[in-house]
Every structure is written in structure tokens, then in C-alpha cells.
Image (cartoon, rainbow, N blue to C red; front, side, top):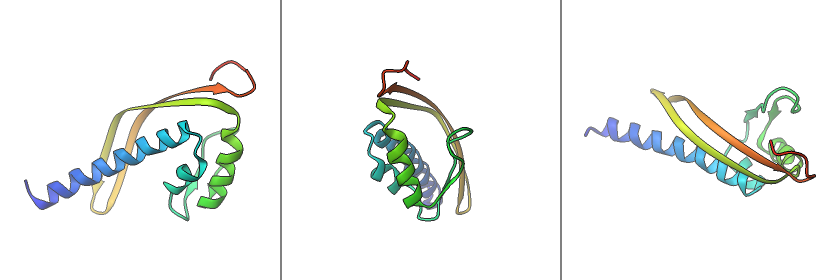
Length: 109
């Protein structure tokens, strides 16, 4: 096994662990720990109807603290992680099944 191949495997494991840590911290409703997984200058967009892109880790943490209060519990399950490495860049895709129990008693999402 070459040093480059070992480094690529380590990178893939680190990225996969990052995705798993995100789900675990969201499930714990640990907003600071979720935000800490992102760079200071991150841009995060959770999709239509959820306030548009958030810019910066501190802004993200504030939005998470507000948003995660809606849930009594969540459970994230990650699969089909695919990571492509090109030099010092990585791109990836994975499937996430997310269940949410609403704090106000609304039907689960």
C-alpha cells in the first residue's frame, strides 16, 4: 500500500466520520457541537422555506439553536457514502434518512 493510497483512505474515513458526527450531534440537539464541525466561513443552506443560506459558523449556531428547539427528538441514519478525491479537493454524496419528533406534538416528520 502506497503512502498516497493510505492518505486517500484516511481522508475518506475522516470525511465519513464528519458526516456521522453531524448526525449524532443533531440527534443530541447539541448546536455548538454541530456548528463546530463547520469552518468559520461556512455557507449552509438547509433548503427552501428554511431561511436561506447561513454564512459563518456563529450565524449557523444561532440558527441551529432556534431551529432544533422544534424537535423533541431526531434520528439521522447515513448510508451510501461516496467520496471522490482530486488533489486536495473532495466531493461527496450520501443518503440521509432523518426522523423528527416534533416538540409541539405535531405529527412526526
